[in-house]
Structure formats: C-alpha cells, structure tokens
Image (cartoon, rainbow, N blue to C red; front, side):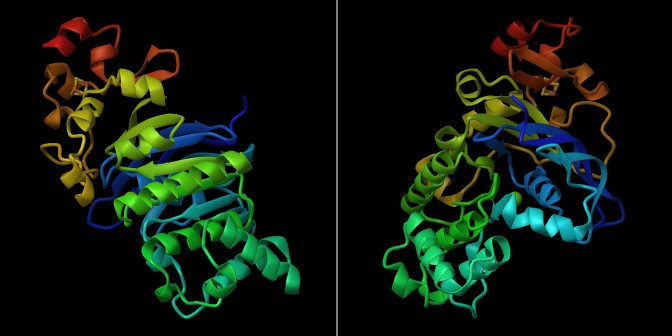
Length: 334
Ligand code: SF4
Ligand code: MG
C-alpha cells in the first residue's frame, strides 16, 4: 500500500539558546490512508515539533535543515507558501491541545467554522449555514442552531474541542494531525472526544497522526505506534505487538510508569532522570544515562535501527546482531 504521508530523515533545529538544538534528528515515518499512527513520548521529545514541521508551522526559531515530507507523493517542504496554505485545512487538518488558544474569542463558533468552510469549499449563504449546522451536529454539539451564534467562552472545554474538530474536518482533510487533543480535558470528556474522533476517522477514512504522551490513548486509538525519545523514533510496531512485547528499554519504562488514576489526572509519566540536552552531540545511545541495561557499548556506539520482527523496529544495542557481549535475552531477563 502506498503511504499517504511519508516523512524521510527529517531534521529540525531550534535556535533558542547559544547552541542550536536538534529537536528532530533523522525522523522517518509513513502513514497509510485510514490509519491512526500514534507518536508517543514525553514532553520535549520532539513530537509537536515534528507535527509543526509537517504543517510548516514551526515558530521562527525552528528550521528544517534536512529531509522530505511527502503527501500522496507531493513534496511539501519545497511548496510555495501560498500552495502550502491550501494544503493546510484542505488536505491536512490539525487539532491542538488547547482549544482555548486556537479559537478566536471575539467570533461566534458558527462564524469560525464558516470561515474555514468558505476558504476550502467556497460554500456561500444558505448552503454555508446548512453545512455549519451539519458539521456541528456531526461532532456532537447539541442544539447547533442556537450554539453557532455563541462565543467560545460560552462553551465548555470539551465542546470547544468539538468546535476545533469541526473546523479541522471542514476541509475534508485526508490527514488529521491531532496534538494531545484530549490532554486539557477531564477524563470523561476525554473518552467522549476520543470516541468521536475514532468514529469520524472510520466514516471519513481519514488518516490520523496522533501525538500523545498517554499510553491509554494509544491503546484506544492507534493502529501503529512510534515511540519518540530525544528527537528520534526509538521503536515502532503495530499496536497489538507493541502492547504485547515492547522491545526498547525506554518503552518498558513507559509501561512500568503506567499512570495510576491519580497520576493520570495529572497527565504525568514519571521516569527517573531527564531527556538529555539536544544541543549535545551524541556518541552513543541517547537513553544510556537513564537505562538500567546500559553497558559500555551503549555510551560509545550509536545503536542501529533493527527489525526484531516483521514491522517491529527498535533502536537499541540489545537487539543488534553484533551485540555479542551478552545476549538480548539474558540482558532482558536480568
Ligand atoms: Fe539501553 Fe543500551 Fe539499548 Fe540504549 S542501546 S536503550 S542504553 S540497552
Ligand atoms: Mg507537545
């Protein structure tokens, strides 16, 4: 199957301090039509920067220095900005974590959905009004005829996120990028919004790039998972395989840190140590300082990208053929 989105060897620098930060460092992924692909990681791992790079919406300090982003074969990184503007909304929709920040406070929600429709469908007048109502109904906003005349402050967090989803769907995108779409919501509303997204995704056969730090969200939504750490993908597998036999020591820690109810409400993954500074040049594995299975080699040699099973890849010396010091099994069982 040909990929809908194909990102190849993407490298992104952030020029924020004295040293440029390699926020994304050689990331490749492919997402197929109708597939939900989860990018999982702690904050600061480069997930959001990856999403913003695909959309070409990086902040000024961000610079894509290498790589390719193809949507149905079309290279996005070299498109003129005017053409890229048409891609956003029309072919790629986006939902962010904080709907409060993304909605215009002085415009009614109906007008905001209408604005996106106007841009992408050319609908006018009564046809436009009908489509706004349809979209609001589709995302489960009750009494849309009344609510379309209301302002964002009159909506709850969950309802605001539905307005954002309606806006993202207005252009009938082939790909939806959802960056922590439910993180700001309470648990019950989270579940409703995830249900809604899954339903819409199936109806529209839309592909979804889902960015999250939450294994529960991955379990519920994803067909495939890629774990991101310090600017790189360190493991990728389909969901079943990933939950049955995660391979990378960092993935193991994610499972071990699987939030209790209380921690979940705080949205935390707690793993001792910090993601390393991305301004430094790595000579070995980026996880070595936090990995309890690390040995000399891990600090000296950058681990290769290894296929441990069909469609299951991992970046770790435990799984490389020349890992003769100790076998992966004995080390994993130690
Ligand atoms: Fe741990 Fe070494 Fe594997 Fe890195 S390469 S995750 S340090 S075992
Ligand atoms: Mg983020």
